[in-house]
Image 1 (cartoon, rainbow, N blue to C red):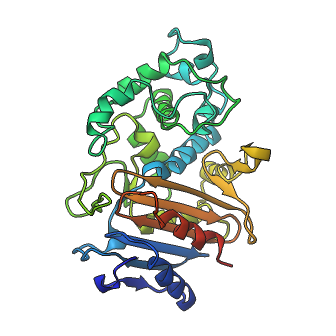
Image 2 (cartoon, rainbow, N blue to C red):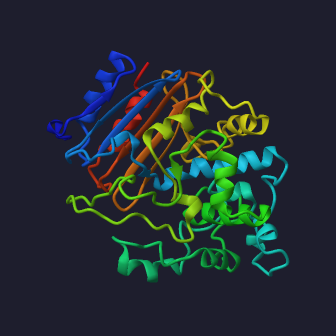
Image 3 (cartoon, helix red, strand yellow):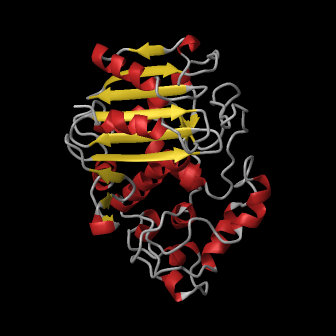
Length: 353
């Protein structure tokens, strides 16, 4: 349970929402916790945790998003498609290494396959694990750079024919990032800033650690601090860091009627495109996905969401299209078997009228 002696802070939007967040916070155990809700642009933010707050307010700290970085990659691809710079059906190998001999299945992998986890690639390259296991709890990704990710893709032997099965893959989304950088002649970090972060006014969102004291510190289950995440060559799949307030701005751009909706036509098109269901999977095709979000039905309409975790932090992003409701949550404790963080954040999104 969150220690309420650590001076929780609520930035009030509405009293009812403030009470809801304060109650939800009691279910989560973490050194630092932020629960943030936006209703048609009216924001309520609750911060707390078992650690003493530092000089920078928790809602202004940048948190590691882990896999919740993938919606940013998806929006970037959708905008480049809207601009006519690439197509969803472009073959990744042709853009990444024209003329390079690859396995026929690799040759068929498209940008859409990479983003929607239908490429047939494994979650991580097979040769990733020998270098990662010895430092699994400290720095598993930092020793696997971008050129190695690309080489692993070009020599891959997909498990399934592209487009036939869904298998979650950090490897695939990382390859997407390197492919878009090659196709545009622009480094991934610069491309993301130009096409997504700057247009949406996400000034407190980045893919590298910021100045001292501005990044939240992650913790193991026992409370021991862990070093900042180094994603190595897997930047597109999990490197984004953002403040909870920037997360709300990002989510508000996806909801209809939110203040500050983009006026750029390609960005508006991309924001619509990433909310459209594109595939179903699982028993009786019960699981629905857009290009980059998981989608579930609720009594109040469909919800779109994505969670992420790093060695010592967790994040949850979600919204209900057309209703103006968005939820962003961050916590600085590594996920564990009995963890309540994602369920709590998901409940704010799905159980609230």
